[in-house]
Amino acid sequence: MKFLKGFTIAMAITLSVVAAAMLLLVLAVRISPAADNNAIKTEAAANAAEQSGGKANNETADTGANEAKGDTPSEDSQGAAKTTASPPEEDSETRAGSNEEGANASVAESYEPAAVDSAGLIGEPTTFNYSVNSADGVKLTWIAQNLTGKTINYYTVKISTFNPVGDPSYDQLTGESSFSVKYVGPVEPDDELLVFDLFTYQGALETIRIDEIVLQYNDGSEVTVNYGYQTSDDSGL
Image (cartoon, rainbow, N blue to C red; front, side):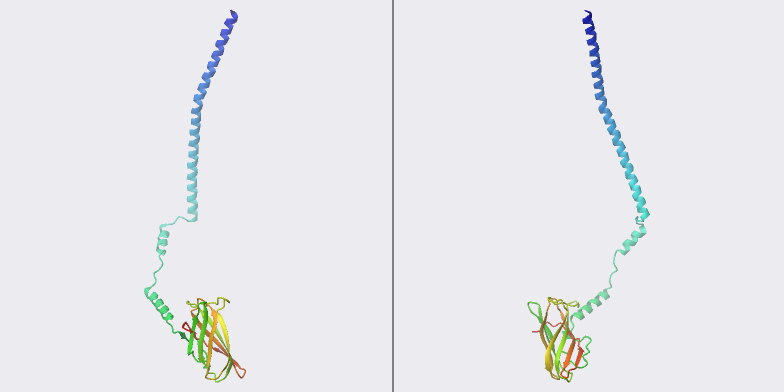
């Protein structure tokens, strides 16, 4: 009987302990999410405050740096920028004068003297033109009178070529813009000197100028004539 009574008391105590433990567990489960939520909210608020403070500090620092560098434009500087943005208008009379000069240059004669200093030794051209074939081969035709009063055994004609804007034009094979063609006489006084020669290959050639003519007489003497005539006539043979 005493054993049964003691067992009953022990069971009652055990059940009480188990019930108390379960109650504590339930309370812990209920309290823990609330505590976690509070902690999360607290941490989020702290992060937000830190970010806001960082942005404010960065803006303050950027503003101070810009002011130190002088990057903030003043109203005067903005007005100056607006004032200088538009380029000055070109005077209409100046434009008209430039256009007229270009037109006059484009309608120049087919050949004309340029610093001619032939000293009466070579006459002005009676024929002076060129032709361009399908392969860009340029053939020059030039005829002028021998006014030296001497027989010419050899003569060398020195030539320069130019493109439509007046810059040197270059041979497609050699890259040269200056050329020499040599002929054998004799050319008697008052007879004609002749150049009829395919001397270059060019696609951009516009003007041919004869710079110099080197004359070798039958007496062994030699003279260089500064000639200077040029042509843009491409109607040659």
